Image (tube, rainbow, N blue to C red; front, side):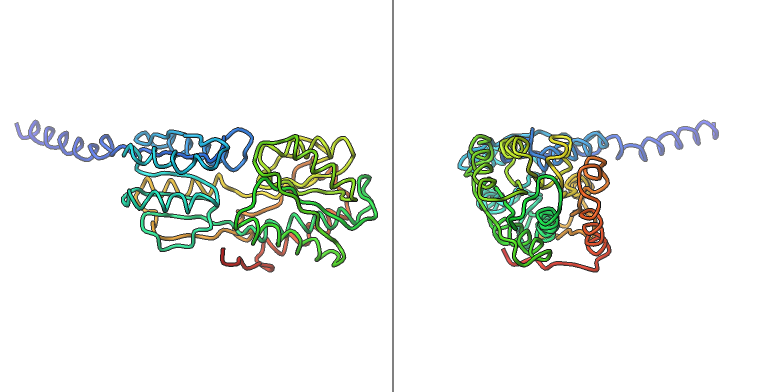
Length: 339
């Protein structure tokens, strides 16, 4: 009888220990994509990282809502998501989203938001924001553009002109990316000038191609693209005319080997995974923001890809390697202005 009693006690104790694991509270994550995920590297990686967290945690579910390209629709779509009361966390990524989410939060103060690629500075309850040092990202792109336009590479000419085509303007672009891009280029040669154009949306590849051709007519031989799906027009124009493109945010050399000669990356996958994993565990510090830079490994240059190594002149690569060593070791850190 004593043995039987001890066996029963041990069994009950085991069940009690296991119960919290079996009954972990469900966590619902709503991922709002401001646009469409396909063809937008930062959104694709955001969705993939959220789904990875769900795959590793049986109590976590993820629903993706695409907002489409009309930015005027985004506030209503975010509000609709929050109004359902279905989501423990709203995860999104875009410098325009902090203002939208803050407006929504006025009516739904208990909703928790995780905003990547954000200019939000901190102190907003129930918000967690991640900002990348895109001054550094722009500088790396500009330094490469400057090296290429001064090089003897086949597509380079004698004009010291570089280009940048962007989808739309927003604070991080105007105060970080483009100033950093020009600063990096002029670190190579102070005489380098910038031809800067705005498409007006993230999808018009035809207009983007027209702008690229106009730039190349004016002597530009390397163009930075920050234009989402519209980048296809820029790439096609540069391919046709034997000029070069630098891609922002992810490694996309395979889209046009030899035309895309630089990819300056953000590790959004790791940033989203880390933040959402902590949120699910209840350890994410809402009401704060973090800034991630090249020293942290979140801003980088995809310089190990053979399509970069095989298509960029050795002297250009050597100079960029020296610069990247400084960024990666923290020997060169650029400040971020107030947005």
